[in-house]
Image (cartoon, rainbow, N blue to C red; front, side, top):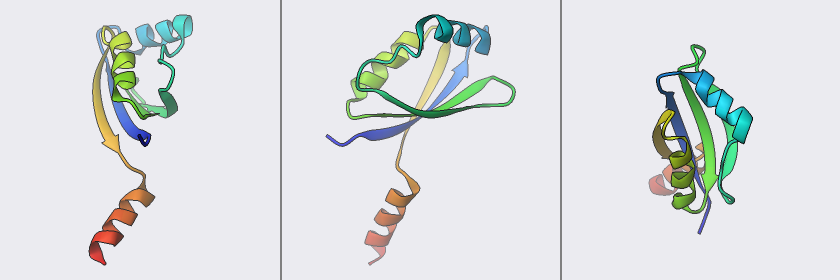
Length: 94
């Protein structure tokens, strides 16, 4: 199976970013083997985080989400790179 990219939008609950960063300091990212963190960006007001994750087994992503679900509301969007999207559009238009 080919690795897929997922844009994960995290909305920090109640305690905001503080509780999330505290757990991350204590326990790390808590990712199962096979789930790869690519990069992340945090909204300037610290209310959301946008993470790009990669895996070839969706259950790994869901396991990771379950480990953080008490502090974060998640939105998961499967994405492709711009070059992959361009290749699809070019192939369709030929």
